Image 1 (tube, one colour):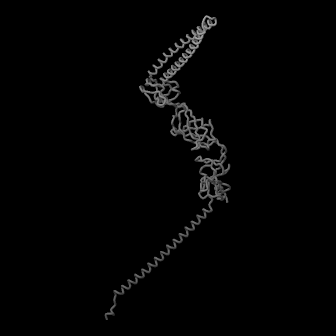
Image 2 (cartoon, rainbow, N blue to C red):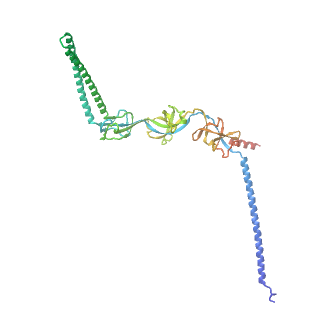
Image 3 (cartoon, helix red, strand yellow):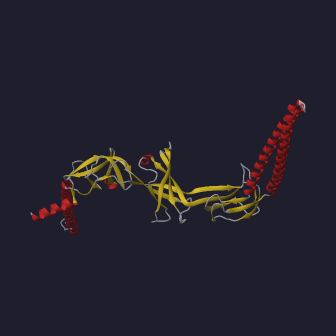
Length: 418
C-alpha cells in the first residue's frame, strides 16, 4: 500500500528537469542561429570588400595620371657660380725698426688713417747721431787730405817738368830727373788714394744719414693702422733677424678676395669679368668687383685655380678679414639644356627625365654637365622643345599613358557635350 501512494515531489522534479532540458535545447538552437548569422554576415562583408578592392584596383589600372609638364629650351646664358672667400687688404705691411733706440714720440694708434710719408713715431738714437757727427768730421779730414794730395801732385808735376828740361840741357843729372819723375807718379797715386778714402767717407756719411732718417718712422702708403706693438719709452732694435715690429698698416680702399675656381669653370672665366660680392651680415647689399688676376695653374690636389677679385671700398664699408660669397658669371662654351631638379628621376641605372610625347611617357637617360642645386645643366639626353614631367609618379615607366591638366579639362568638356 505504501507503493500505491503518489509521490508529488518526484513528479515535480521530473517536470523541472524536463523544462530545463527544453530550455537548454532552445538556447543551443538560438546560439547556432546566431553563429550562422554572424558567419553569413562576415562572409557577405568580406565579399563586398573584395569586390570594392577589385574595383579600386581596376580603376587604378585604368586611371591616367595627371601630370605637370614644362618645356625646356637651349640655354647659352652665363651660369652663376657662388664660391666662398675672405676679404684682404690690397696692400699690407708690418713696419720694423731700422734704428736702435727708444721711442720718443708715437703719433698714431690702431684705427688711425694715415697718408704716405706721415710720421708714425720718432726713435731717439743718440749713439747713431754721434756716429754721424764723427763720420762727418772724418769726411772733412778726408777732403783736406785730398786737397793736400792734389797740391803735392801739382808741385811734383812742376818740379818734374823743370828737372826734365835741365837734364836735357845738361844742367841736372839723370838720377835727379828719375827721382822727380817717380815722385810725381807717387804723388798722383797718393791723390787717388785720398780720393778713394773720400768716397768711402762720403758713403759712410750717407749710410749714417739714411739710418738717422729711419729715426722717423713713416707710412709707406695710404692706409689704416691695424696693429701697434710699441709705446713711448719702448726699446726697439734694428736687427735684420730679430728686429722690433712697430706697426702694421693696411690699404683697404681696394680689397682683394682670393677664391679657388674649380676646373669646370676655369675655361669660361677670364680676367676682367664682373663678379658680385655678398656679406652674410649685410643682406640685400651687393658689392661689385672685377676678376683681376689668377695663378694660371691648377692645384694638383684640388684641381682648382687661385683667382683674385678686386672690390672698390672707397667708403670703407668693408673690412679686411670678412667672410663673403663671390658670385661669378661663367660663360658657357656651348649651349646646354637646363631643367628643374624636380624633373629628375634617380634609380639604379642612373639619372632620367620623363618626357611627355603624345599622351605617353618617354624616359630619357641624362648626361649631367653641372648640378646647380635647383636646376641641372644637361649635356645630352634632351632636346630643345621637349616637355619634361615635373614630380613624376613613383611607378612611371616608358609608354605609360598620362595626361596634363589642360588635356583632362578638354576631356571633361567633350564628355559633357556628349
